Image (cartoon, rainbow, N blue to C red; front, side, top):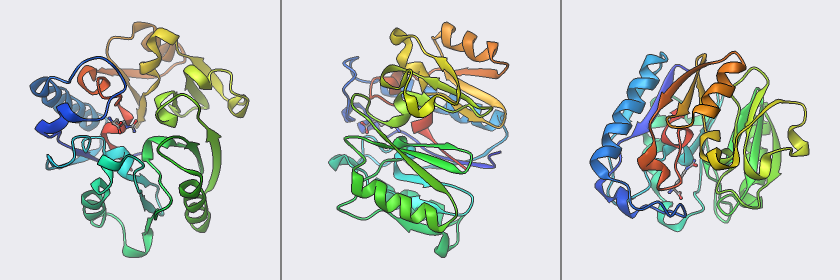
Length: 255
Ligand code: CIR
């Protein structure tokens, strides 16, 4: 269960964020509205939300998930792989110092790079995607840190997706949502897999929050499949974040 979440209000420079989506620029006032609704959804799931101030120097900084990886016993501050995002992690670390003791805070150091979107937790195991943003050295450091705190790590090579959780979500209960290059992946054959339609691939990025699965609004087939698996769904509109390849998981750190 999660007690806390950290989010960061999008800055007006959000419109300059990194994007491969080809969906145009986000509409800033609408992004702010959607962000506020996202916070309400987290609170409705029973977590206390810390809202960080926006930082216009970092257009992508509302995607706080990439700046840290959190577990009960350790917080790993990342070194983002995208040049324009390096440094976002410092403000996130400051906030995390309210929740974690100094000896529970560890760092990924250059030349290692790692972004939280490449980490998917399943119980005591953390899957780490090797992507354009997370390099083998970052994954190696992550493995060493996690081992020290009693967790295990498994690596997954990415070939197409931005981040591991761009195409995968674990809504607990042994269930895995899979899209794109992860559909039928041998590493995940022991899960009860819910395949996401290729045209709805964006909606694979869902989050489990204390018994409720937050699903992006506008993907009825995905919602129906998750509900058919016996899970409770809450839809949240993230259309403006999608324009920057950002989804539900990217917008918060949950712990
Ligand atoms: C980026 O390219 O870094 C941002 N525009 C989107 C980050 C999405 N984060 C995530 O999937 N964890």
